Length: 290
Image (cartoon, rainbow, N blue to C red; front, side, top):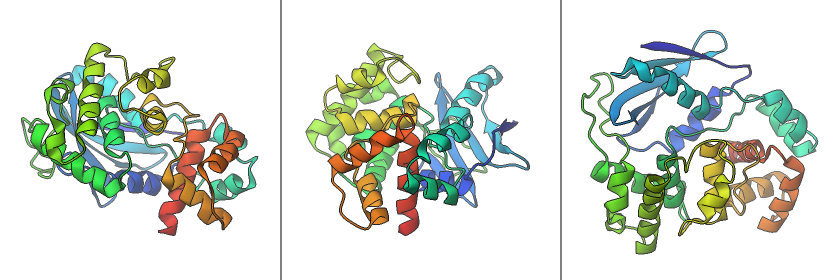
């Protein structure tokens, strides 16, 4: 099935693709020749989609999913995941009060905040990323998917690299995830997050009031993790991962001097209520510098 998802331009697809590519989990996602593809699991039904820019102001989706009735929900998730409904003019007006942000936005005016297909998956990614590099976290995530994810029931001949769907909350809640090669306390946090979702199916619902506070109440979830989940899954435009090393390094490189976490947080006050977009601008500037 072919779908077209429209957006208000501009849209920086290379930046979106670069962000997702750097975090692609083997067996679950691929980025090839400007196309992002991944497996999906919706209410126990498995499928695959691929997405790439189309002619005009739209992204083209090729969807392989056996339940046509699920298409409206899939579209909602895709629009959130690729931030297609962002009000960039409003965001830019707010951030451009800061001359640094104004310059960076002028260089990359179509930056969006990459979302997530699934809340549990994003939360697991965030916990895996605590105090380790993105590369190390993605390797752990690949091991988790290979060991606990379900194989795709009908492998798509055109996408043989996509072999599994992300593990379910039921499986992760019961698993001893420390066997994957991480601190036992972090394994308990992962299982606890999965159990929390079983206890409250709306835990990762975008726009839910008090969502960050509920995340902070979970064992092993600190402010950075909760804010990262809020930024990419809860879709809170003012979420900001305090103390994020990448954000600190980006601001330090741009300003030409050392920056402390406290100084970053103080600077970010001027970016409210669009700090999530400011974070994406800074992360992108760092990737360009690399």
